[in-house]
Image (cartoon, rainbow, N blue to C red):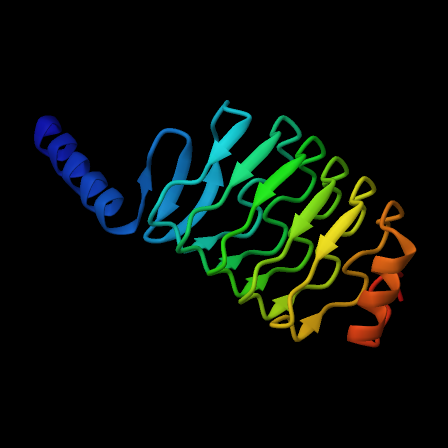
Length: 176
């Protein structure tokens, strides 16, 4: 009886794993959602097939230095890279349409970000506390930038700050 229960449990576990997710060692992926990164590699290449980077997927990973997001990803979830304080480089592909609430909150070593053509919205406080950010490129496709999206980005040049404030006519540099 014990062996039969263990066998049924193993079959059930296999079915759930197959239907609802996979653990590829370093990544927990459910369908096309990257739920969590558990790896030790500091220069991360997200696997192909991921369409959504989930809420807090990389949160608090101060060991990460660079991340490459593959073509096919369409959204970066809220707090996805929050607190990745040593992240200096991130490549965002042109298929991304939204960057979530606090997605890069306190990524204090990030120096430059190119938001690709196709992004429509940047969430509230998305780049809050990115104190080393000196350059940001925002294409015309961006129609909405949340409040305080660039709060605490004191290294941005006044020219870039004025350009962003003119386009979005709201306070993207302070918390209100």
